[in-house]
Image (tube, rainbow, N blue to C red; front, side, top):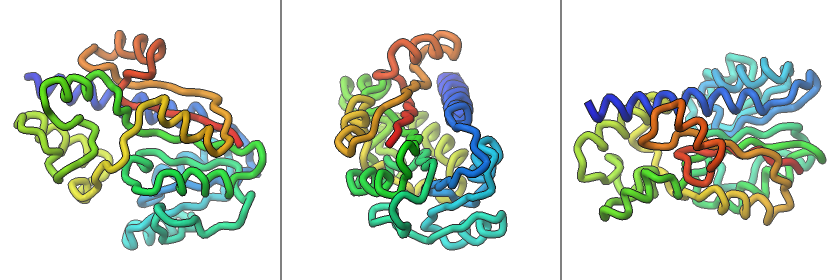
Length: 240
């Protein structure tokens, strides 16, 4: 029963955070959009439809998923996001990094490269788990690895059986079969992400929090708006 409740909370968090990304996009039929970690291109196309543009680029490391994205009309580069981006300066109007930065080692280079390839007044939207969420703090208090990571082994290193099952189930909903190989390496607090972006001269425009475990969705939504610093997931919009 507890597992079902937390699965319900996670599904609500995932749905509401995904909708928030859409709401932060700005309509511009001439915009050039880059989706970092575009997977099979499904979300990239949704982003493009909301912005109203067909100038869609993606970066993906999985060759098979890249082929699927290319078939959808997306210009995809196979690239490791821990390295320099294969684009010239000032090319993009919007860059999206959703469920990505936590999987990287070199997050400073990643943010620096996003700044480089964005046009002046272009913006980035980053979504990532929050290390300072209350459920991560609780895990540390009882001597467990934070639920959001860093990942130590594929089952998310929890000694609690239902937590192992819950984490595997939720990751497969996001990343399908390959979920267990996608470790969380760099997990940041909301303020740490702010600091990282400001180090590279980004201006923070918007921050939203999602999920305030173990509160039910209605209360969690209110608390996350008031206190994104302890919500489960954060989305930050920043402008060059």
